Length: 162
Image (tube, rainbow, N blue to C red; front, side, top):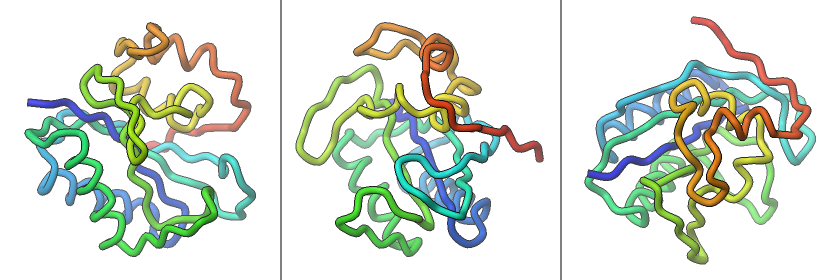
């Protein structure tokens, strides 16, 4: 059994529903969800947008390998209406990122794990710290809690309560 840690994000339409629908698809097509953070709200990172983002981290236990997990995540995005453009950062209905896959370090043209920009993004580290603060990053050998404390990102990230 493999453990995949995802970050889901949305800043278009009904953001909570977009993420909730993606969670449902992940649980059906990838594997059992063993942990899930609250929703977190923040401004756009890496581009200008008038729409705030909602993000959520989750852990899925899966029999899929990393490549098949990525393929499935991309299919879930596409079915939800995600349109990928040549522009790297844009508004989006749903974004599903693989942050970690077990403790593996994967460098392929289509998949890099751990996510290479994770340590620069408070919007990703905050929900991640909620569900696995003591998880040790296999490249930097620091816990998620330590990485969040060291993160220089000044973006305001707000935990949303149900």
